[in-house]
Length: 405
Ligand code: SAH
Ligand code: TYD
Ligand code: ZN
Image (tube, rainbow, N blue to C red; front, side, top):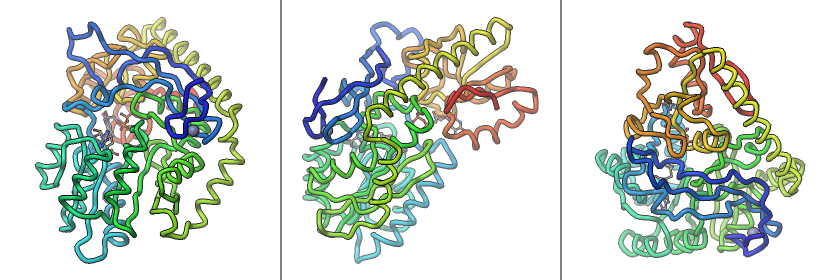
């Protein structure tokens, strides 16, 4: 048993994916030797219920200056973050000279709406090349990791923040104590710290096992987040379910005692109780379902190859690193994967070394089957690539089970 990174309790391991690469560490062809691998395993804290990884990857390896992930590649995500920004502009950011800080601002997908509204803001993100994209649009960014020390520096130069917002980033940060200490220093007395991340309830319910990879150090649920924020002087005051990334929750937190929690908090806690999210047996079932999906996917791909069918991948997602490396999929089963991210094209997927090609390669010529690794964008991609199905092509989706579309 290892020790919980939040509360020091015992963490019981329930799923081991073995040696895995850093999920966004795409390789230059010819640069595959000495690839960094770590043991990707997850467990459940028997004290605070936080689901977490057992081995921590150094943060500079996951988020180097040339980190290739770009948030703005999806129309649905652009509209999601514009809505989030508009919501905050109409609620928390209405006082005189409000100040908003975003942790993990990436290419500015959320802050561009705040900036256009003329509201004082600051993005914090260590990924230099992504941050440069944000800065080029006039967004203020500090290229560094948010933690206690950088938060104190921001507070000293810009004053207190009315809103600290973060999407798909807080759960990536193992050193939660430092992040919350920073938030406590930076936040105005009546400010709110809002973060959204993939939801453990959706992951367990639908066997979204590929949501487990290095960057997702914690898999949050309402109960574990409530306990975590309370430990660091905050209170969970609202919870909202979001349809993005296969199901996420937005957690609104305030300094303890500052705001009355909405009924949603208790409702979500009750729902998690019914779902069995605090029972280790739920995770054991999830692990068994994961192994079954992998076996089915390998069987399908192997039989398609035996029939001489052409299969490629679509979406060189971080999630696909777990699928490819856990199930043992390489270029012999999937000769290439198409992806719209310029920073990933021409490179090889981590661990599995499948070449990444631009979406134009997809129709040149169309394959018989395509594994939809970017399944959280299924609607957008299937609509955009309608000609593939018109030509007789079939999508292979592996969550919640292996099926064809
Ligand atoms: N918010 C965006 C980006 C998520 S990817 C979205 O939802 O699409 C996670 C981002 O967090 C990366 O850009 C990474 O560089 C950044 N990040 C990782 N650790 C961080 C930290 N301690 N402080 C600020 N940003 C961090
Ligand atoms: P994302 O869903 O953020 O997944 P992860 O967090 O697992 O990396 O990434 C989506 C990937 O799919 C990204 O690399 C861009 C790619 N993509 C396309 O190639 N075409 C598209 O139309 C969309 C929406 C995404
Ligand atoms: Zn714990």
